[in-house]
Image (cartoon, rainbow, N blue to C red):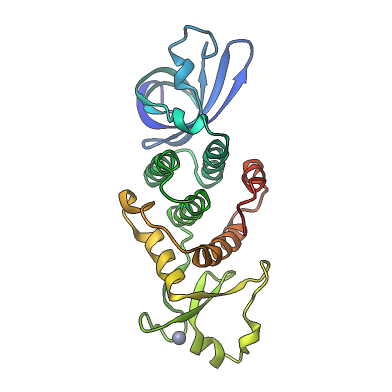
Length: 264
Ligand SMILES: [Zn+2]
């Protein structure tokens, strides 16, 4: 494909190239995640200077030639500057971008991931709910958009959906079972994992419902709820362990987030 195309998307990454240029990673509605050259983007008067900043959401004009892209223009940009003024929020935002670098591909339909990132960046700015909760909502929904949602909708053994107070989340299989089926399977109560490394996690109905909600909610209502510290702690463990199974390389920005000291 050769010629100019219009893409709507977000800058996931931006690195300097040569003396005056940048290479940007764009997560777009139309083309999935692409890498594009932004010529002259580091020159003081360049129209592409702002367009190539991390988190910028915009309508980009891109020139496509064979397998490469060059950004030629940017319109209707939203910059999310409030995030970059706060180091903690910046770490979280960078982590969300790095996670989506991992979960997205060129020429695949990444519309849902674009919506998720846009909504999450807005939630970081608003700051209505704790940053670690924003993180776990983002991680679980990104996994779901990637096609790896755990089945938290029914007991994997008896198919029960309701009237269960306590569940067991099997992290490796990505399924839940009700406590009765878990015990009937010959597991003693003390086999429930209590350490952070366990792959069998006891979750309450509140945690199960929260995971269900995160996977299915509309984006406008996704970051609109809060949890007690106890519930958040279990959600963090469940989502964190589940994510580790699906991300098989260390993420640099996750180390930055974890140095913030919020984590369970
Ligand atoms: Zn059951």
